[in-house]
Amino acid sequence: MKKMISLVCALALVLALASCATKPSVPGAVTTESPSSDVPAETVSAGLSEDSEDGLPGLEVLSVESVEYDGYVACLAVIRNNTDSATGAEGSLSAYDSSGGELVTVYDRAELGAGETTYMYFTFESRDPADFSFDCEPVEPELESIQADVRVKVTDRGNRLIVCAGNDSEYSAEEPCVMLALYDDEGVLAALEPCYVCDHDGQLKPGAERYEEVNPDVGYSYYKAFYRFPSAGNTPMNAPGAAGSPLDCSETYEYRTEFGETVYMVAVRNDGDRTLSVEGNAAALDADGAPIAAENASLACLGAGDTSLLEFFFIDAADAQDFSFSVQYDETENYTPVLDKIEKHYERMGDEVVVSCLNNADDPELVAEYFTATVVFFDSGECVGKQTKYMSAKEDGLDLAPDDPAAEQRFSASGDFDDFKVFFYAQHANFDPEDY
Image (cartoon, helix red, strand yellow):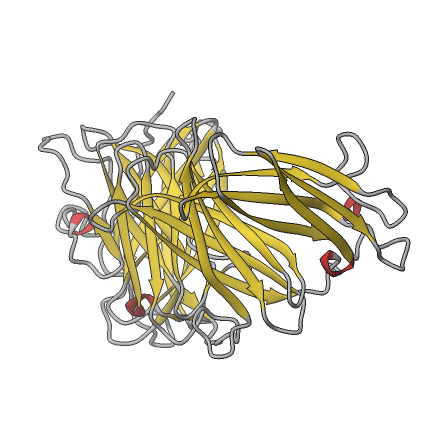
C-alpha cells in the first residue's frame, strides 16, 4: 500500500517558492491541469544554493517529493538553472531513521543549459525512513544539454500515457528520459514513472522521433512531466534521414485481427553491402494525429539484399486511422546472414499457401536460427491477414541446418484472398548465446 514519506530538508525559502514546481511554462517541464483541491502534494521547496568556490552558478531547488510502494522509496527533486550559462549538478539524498541515524545516501547527476529545469531521481529499498535531506551542488558540466532542441509531448489516454520525443538538434541525446510524476485527485504523489525515449544504443539520434508507452500500475488524476536530454556532441552516420541510408521501407501493411489487435507491418530491404541490425518504433494515431499506442520491433540480422518484416502489434488501437514509424540501423558483426543460402519455394494450393525451404549452405555449421516465414494475404489490394510459422524440419523446431531435409509449412488466411507475399527471417549467431 502506498505510503507518503514526509521530507525534512535544511533548505531556505520554503514557503516563498512553494508554487514554482507547478508552473507549466518552466522549460523542461510539462504539467496537466490539476483538479481543484485544497490538499497540496507533500512537497518541500527550496531557494537558490550558494555559488561554489570556483564561481560556478547556483541552482534553484524547486521541489522534492517522495512516494513509497512495493518495498521501495522513490524520490524526485526538481531543479532549475537560473543563470545564462550551462552547468552540471550533483545531488545527494540521505534517509534517516527516527533516531536521526543515517540509513542510506543515494546520488544522481544532471546537466542543465541556461534557464533549464530538470530532475534528479533517487530510489532505494525502504527501511522505514523517518526523515530525508537533499543537497545539490553545481559542478563543471560533463555533457551538453540539448533540451532546447527536443520536442516532448505527452498524450494521456486515461489508462496509459504516450510519450513522444523528437530530436531537432544535430547531436544524439544520451540516455534521454522523461520522468512522469503521477498524482491522485488530492494532489498527492502516487507514483514516479521514468520513460526512456531511446533506441537500443541508448540514444535519441538527430532527426529521430520516438514514441514510448507507459502503463502505470496505480490510478492517477493528473501528471507532471520533467525531462533531461544530455549529449556528448556526436552525430552518428546512421541517424534517421541521414544521407546514404541503405534501408528501403516503402512498403507497409496493416490489418485488424479477429481478436481486436491491430497489426502494422513494415517491409525493410537492405540495399547496402553490410549486415545490419534494425530497430523500429511505431505509433498508432487517431483521426487528429494524436498517438493511441506505441510499440517497438527489431531485426537482429538483415543481410545485404535481404528483405524482412518489422511487425508491430497494438492491443488497444482499434480506432487507429494512421501510423507513424521510424527505423534505425547499426552494422553488426554478431550475426552471419543466412537467407541467401536458403532455397525457397512457395505457391498457392487451393485455400492455402505452401512454403518449402532447404538450407544449401556449404558450411555445415551455418544453421538458420529462428527461421520464420510470414505470408501476408491480400484481397482486392487490401491486407486481410498474415500468418507466421517457423521453418524447421524438426517438430517444434526453430532452426534449419544444412544437413536437414527440406522444411515445409502450410499457411491459411482467415477469409478469402486473391494475392499474397512471403517474407523470411533467419539469423546465425557468431557467439554462444549461453554467454549472454
